[in-house]
Image (cartoon, rainbow, N blue to C red; front, side, top):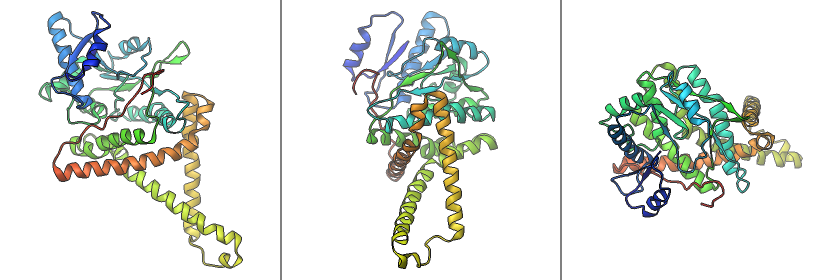
Amino acid sequence: MFVGLYPNDPKGQAAVSAFNDSRLYVAVGATPGPTTKADCLNSLWRAALAEEAASGRPFAAIVLHDAEDLVHACELAVFAAHLPEYAMVQLPVLPLPDASSPLISGNYIDEFAEAHAKDLLVRQWLDAAVPAAGVGVAIDRAMLGRIADARDGAPFDAASLTEDYELGQHVHALGGRCRLVWVIADGQPVATREHFPATFEAAVRQKSRWLTGIALAGWDRIGWRGGLVNRWMLLRDRKAPLMALLTLAAYGIALLLGIDSLPRLALPAAARMPPVAGDVTRALLWLNWTLLCWRLLVRALFTLRVHDLSQAILTPPRALVGNFINAMAALRALSRYAQAVRTGRRLVWDKTIHRFPGFSP
């Protein structure tokens, strides 16, 4: 196990050194933190290469995890079973329920349930690039070496805010096959579990980094590579900021229509006024309402499938909260990206604080 640390983090170095385990390797980066996760991963890559040279034994694969992850005991066995056929193997990510934040932190439960039980499976079925989640993912050693060779020895771009998303794109561009694997062991999925942000501000910061790295900076960095299917998936990913802002505008329109309807119900004179929405507009509104209900039902069913009924019931209110988070994250992402373009400065990693189960942030 290789642990990435910063030279200006003596507490972190002391905590890792306290384990005194010969299987534990410490990789202290050359640049004081905080930098980006990609920069830290490059330090780990160099440490892994040094160990290969010293032992004379190459690694079969590189597995990525964050410090706060709960790792399933059967994870390595699942990776070993699938890596001979695939260049990248991703395990599902199952956010842990947080009783103190059922709507904000719980929103990640719904998003990952749908993404990892439906969306990514459709992508791999269509032979499009499958984004890595950054945790619970194994990359074939030879494939990661090819990516590193193409990038002057560093497989991850230190300027990237979403190195996990780009990793899947790089593997696909080099002809590697990616697969998200669902395996049940002892009645539970072999998956990575962790807590996600529990406050509105923390969720906005994290999602703004995702939106900036995938939809805005990612457009500049990787362009529109691949065939028609992969470009369609890139379009789906990059429309997220626009969709978040349009959703916020739609809420405003729905509120105005509601305000217009109340006087019409209470006052006969108001009821005789021309309607704000004509027949065509009303038909479109009912169509959108029907599609929204279907969309929420599908998401709730995937949450039920991956978690339980108590979580699935919360899907509709969490979707409302999630839309506001996404809208604020889109505004923050657009502002930060515009500032970076205007000033020519590199985008800065917007870190969010995570916690290990049982510990406060």
